[in-house]
Amino acid sequence: MSDAALPTALNLPMADPLPAETQRYFDICVEKLGFVPNVLKAYAFDVVKLNAFTALYNDLMLGDSGLSKLEREMIAVVVSAINKCFYCLVAHGAAVRQLSGDPALGEMLVMNYRVAPVTEKQRAMLDFAANMTTQSAAIEEADRQVLRDHGFSDRDIWDIANVAGFYNMSNRVASATAMQPNPEYHAQSR
Image 1 (cartoon, rainbow, N blue to C red):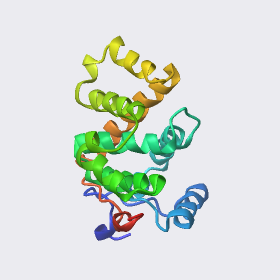
Image 2: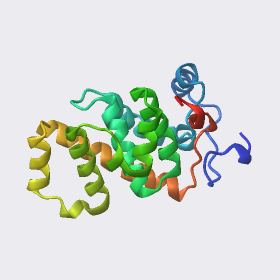
Image 3: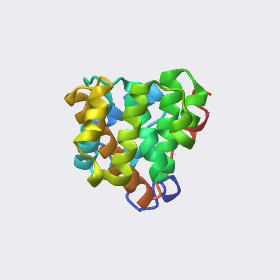
């Protein structure tokens, strides 16, 4: 992999060769997505770090939850919009477009989630994720109660907080390393 193809501004090339299990995972990405997301390539300089990242991502975003996959992607976009994370806005905006079948929804969430046509329950979820991103120390029981009043269980609140927390971390790493989104994301589900 040449330096020009590195997914970040850091000189951390992927392990070569990749372990067989990691190569299989990347092959599945190519089969399902048509490419390996740059975030995975960025972590692939250290397979232990890659495995930790993908295990947490897969659990939070694809595992069992009272939140739909779309709702988890919506949280990712709202948090990333507040943090101005180019990589995650492009990648997760594409996921929102694909999962919702609504190209405008992803754009609205990127620009200003408050104009997006979401349910009151989803709005409460996104408001909580936004507050967690901008002022997590100010969250009180009343904020969690708003979510309960909209039908979220305590497990759902845990999931909302963990998805928002994961993207706050990921956004900071992506921004600090100038992680570049794969060009393929830009045209997806438009």
